[in-house]
Image (cartoon, rainbow, N blue to C red; front, side, top):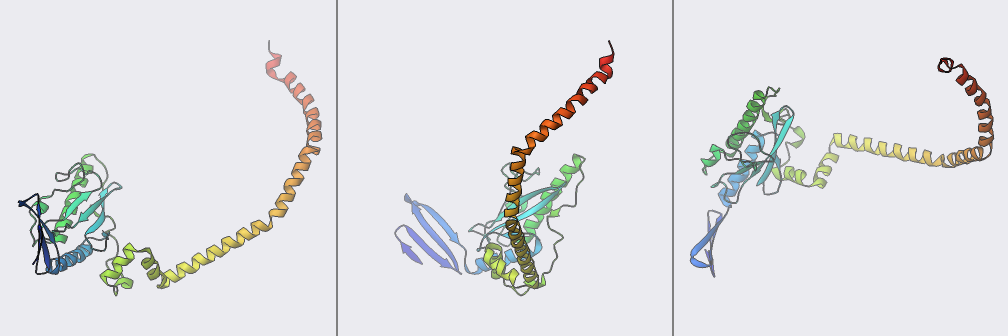
Length: 268
């Protein structure tokens, strides 16, 4: 236990509890910082959720912010954010949709107030709860689409058909996978180390070289194009006027005869 002026900090089983007086000794604020067993459980829960919900994306290194894209049918999709508060697993995850979806447990702001979240306990299973909420959201969307006589697709997470195993990633740790998701340099280095990445890099280099050669060929034609432009300018300034005058002199009699022979000129 560490006690400072107005602050009491206690660590129990790796978890930190910080109590701070605000204004008076009777007004205390308690902040819980997960650690030890709580932190290990959070990481294990996130790993289980990632396996249960294909297509989920981890947005930060602490694995407390995630996002998954849901398919609502009829070509409609919505992103759902999943946030694990600092009080997790004592408090439930915070779920919110990017926009309002018509169902009985979503606020106009997109925040989810599902019964499973209201009945959350420290022993609740994150993957089971989140997947159940996802299924209910997709089911509500399917029913709404059916009521509007719109064709719908089977509800579930967008990207459900993604393969369940990725041999190239099996030997990587969770930390390495997270780094590839969050750091472009790590992702590029991994792709470059694979056969597919090397073939892709080779194809890209070949395309670059072809573009460079085309640019050089176009540059080499610059003198010829400039010469042709000069010739056209000379023709327009000298021969064009004379040729056009001759053309007009030949066309004028034809137009005069055509006007006289027009049936409309023969009728009273």
